[in-house]
Image (cartoon, rainbow, N blue to C red; front, side, top):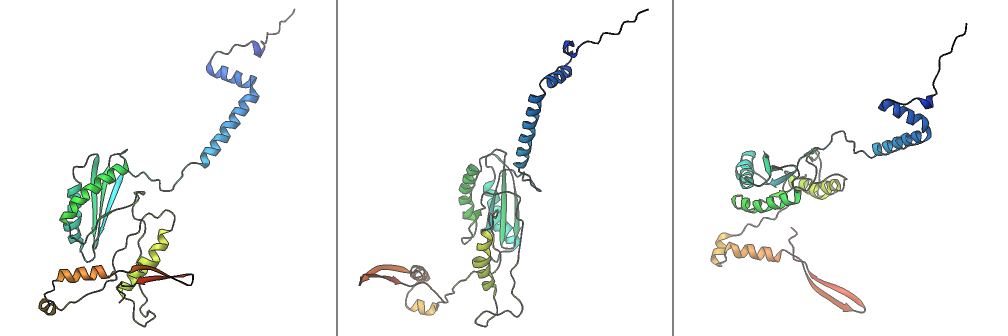
Length: 264
C-alpha cells in the first residue's frame, strides 16, 4: 500500500488574486526598496512635523480692520455718541463688509470692521481711510481716529497702570502728577515695550499730556486791537527752533541756530 504526499506548490508559482496579495508579494520580492521607501517617508514626516506652526491658541482671525480713537475727558457715553456712532455710520454699506462691532470706554473708542474671507486687507484699509475722512466732519476737531497696524486679531492681551508710591518725590521734591506719569509711559515704558517681538501697537489712556497754557489779558488785547487769532498764529510760528547755517573759522565750522521753542 503506497501513500502519496500532497503536492505543495512553490510560492513563486502562486498567482496573487487580490490587491493586498499583490502588495504583499511585491513587498517580499522588493524588500530592500520597500524599506528604503518607508524610511524616506518617515524622514519626511519627522521633518514636516518640526516645521508645523503649532500654537496653543491658533489664530483663526478673519479679515478685519480696527479704528482706534482717543479723546481725553470724554465719558463712555460721549465717546459712543460723538465718535463711535459717526464712524460706524460712515462705514455702513461698504462692499464685502460683513459686520461691525465697537467698544466705547472712557477716553477710548474702538470700532472693528469685519470683511469677507479672502478680502485684500490693503484694499479694505484704503476704502476705510476714504470713509474716515467723511466721518471726521461729524467729530470734534481735536479728535484724530487711527487705523491699527496690520496684525493678528486676537485683540488686546495686556493692560497695565502706572502709579507712584505714596511718598515718591521727583528730584525737585515735588510729588508725581498725572502729567509726570503720562510722560513716564510715553518716553520710558512704551518705547521699551514696542521693541518686544510680536507687539504691534501700544495705546496710552489717561494722564495729561504736557501742555503750556497761555492766559491772555482780553482787555489789553482789545485796547491794542489784537484778535485772538493773531495771538495764536504768533505762538504757533515762534514755537520752533531754526537753523541759520554755519560760520567757518580757523578750519572749524560753528553752527548757528536760533532756539525759540517753549521750555517752561
